[in-house]
Length: 192
Image (tube, rainbow, N blue to C red; front, side, top):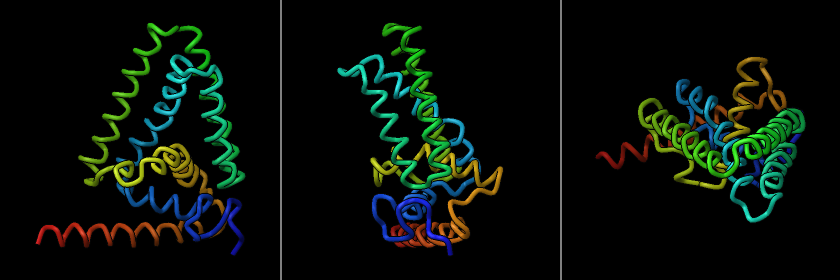
């Protein structure tokens, strides 16, 4: 099997794409919930950058945030990470343009409405369709950091069959199935 183009294959470290994807995927197995996340995760990222443009004490906070996300995605997987880094840059550029155009007075209202709407949709996805609490309740940092990359990898796999390396999705699906079974077993024990 080809070595993952990111930092590893299964060790659970910071650059272990399988581990990150399996963790996030265990909370996102319902197709409707995944679709909802695909629609609303990147707008959350963009408007978070907009908020940084409007309110951060450093003029470069949004650029730094986008750069950290983009660099992390590049380290996880060079090919999909390059696309994710480009999307991070485009979100930064769009948020900078919006901040300049809207100013603080209108800009924070756009952030508030977009964030509330997008988060509400995601919680509906989890409550109504997934029937499981979001990943952010178990690992806030991992959930926030991986969400944009997860939905991008899901879309790339669905529409063009992309895998970071051959067998990635089959291996990760096995890990997801194991994690979901463990969760379902714990849930069943609580009910008895």
